[in-house]
Length: 250
Image 1 (tube, rainbow, N blue to C red):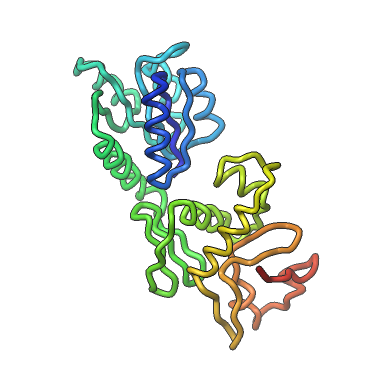
Image 2: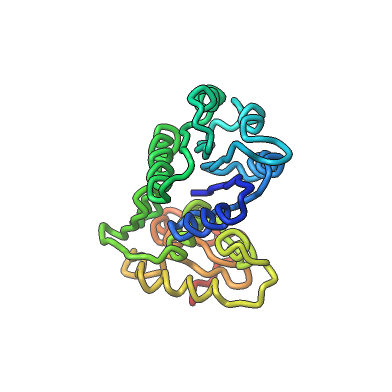
């Protein structure tokens, strides 16, 4: 889940960012209302954790600007204001939930999960590719019905690749989107984690042959594999890859 935190308290913002990242979410944090609204427009996050007492533009104004524009984004308001009327106004402006400060981090994460479950009506929480299934809410992965235990970062990498539905993802894109690192960073962390996933997921088997669940397109990047095996009888490899046959390997 992509989460945007809009909170001007630096200590609290850093705490929430770190904690939600450990929960496996992609998290951005900004410290004022104008930046929060701009980031919401650019990123279209799944969830915004929004403080009300913000510089430049307060949280109520952010809600007013967002009202009716981002139907796919849930909003959890954090506030130290105990006035019931203000919380009611937040809900009327489109907030999905309100949490009073001080709060328990466990309660916050539980409310985040609840908000994501409510979105099931509009978005299937299950991602599927062949025999691989990924549950975004329960954060569980199976391959051919077999449970696969993944670390937080392994899960995030697999989720990103599965969301791309077989499109090739380059190392620079994966560094930027999964690790929030510069695309120019001199690191082989992407290759290392791809190998971790391959070892844990095993192979796609078809027509007596086996291919890795994640394919390497040399010089380009990685994508979810196995599609060739499933359609090989109906379509030639040249039809599938007009630019040439992709090499598969570690």
